[in-house]
Length: 296
Image 1 (tube, rainbow, N blue to C red):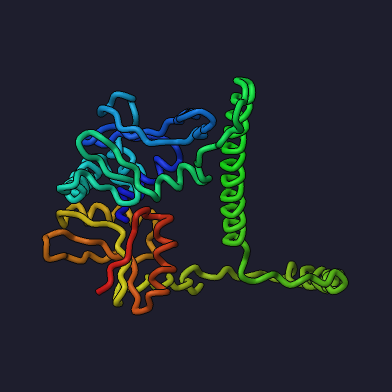
Image 2: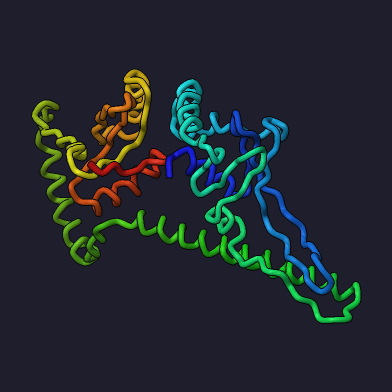
């Protein structure tokens, strides 16, 4: 899935909305419980709605692209125009894992549907000859169960994210435990050494004589599996992206990769190992959302 489709998917799955120039506004609303027939109630659920462009005052996807990728709106608009041209098919505007827009109607994809409604939204069958109060009770119960399942899922996802974040912050080596007895004995010796050194002159060490730590080598961009962090129609735009990318992470080696169709890809990492490329892709996606792997 390309980075713009990922951005649209993440926005809608978070139950927020955005404006897609040339398509319209996509936003999420709650569909209330419905009694389709006597004794059968469909619980409430979230659904994606397509409205006329700018009718809801939602943020433009172009501004979101510029914010996420750290580029100006002109470059973001160019990327969106290229993406929209590729998304337009005979079947309508197809957005991977999000849905399809055809004849002014939005049809949600199964991936986004599962993200919006993680619990199974199935009809609730009520017993025969129930009164209005009991129907209301069943509806309220269905709402509570649906909300409860959503809250539990959200808390579970957040707890896993926090655990993963803590694991990333743990040091690779645990410092050794200090022997306080040795420290106490050593402090007596150190006091004597300090007194001795204070009576002598200490020559300053020249800055040039202090060896500098070598700068870590940039990850290789030579390999069968290349991690692509950007695609542009002109070399000038690719250079602008590389300049802004170096401000985010200057330890990477960015390389331009021209394609037969005239577009220019920006490679940040490559390896002959698919596993290593996938590992680096997860890291780079935190810096450049929507990065992907090109196999050559």
